[in-house]
Amino acid sequence: MTSRLSLLLMLFALIAIGTAFLVQADGELLGFAVVSEVPKDKARVSAKVSLNDAVSDMKLLASETILNNLIWKKLEICHAMKLEGFKVAEG
Image (cartoon, rainbow, N blue to C red; front, side, top):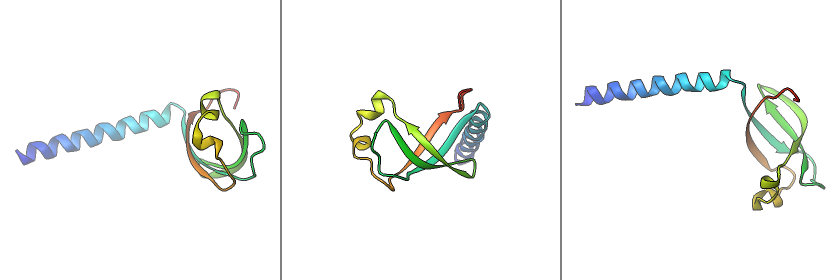
């Protein structure tokens, strides 16, 4: 019984790893951002963003849904966040 369970767990791990590689290959980006200036306009927030081991100054553009989020309304300098998204032709 335990060898069968071990085999199933290994199979699940291989499937999960394969899925992770496929997702990354399709242009999905994972980044981390830290608010770098006191936000005057919550719809456009200046941040230092780390993508693919490179740090850049960027503007985070918030949608209406994000603007209504209570945590986003209290956003301050030095707040950090994890970003997930896709690269598009417009940048």
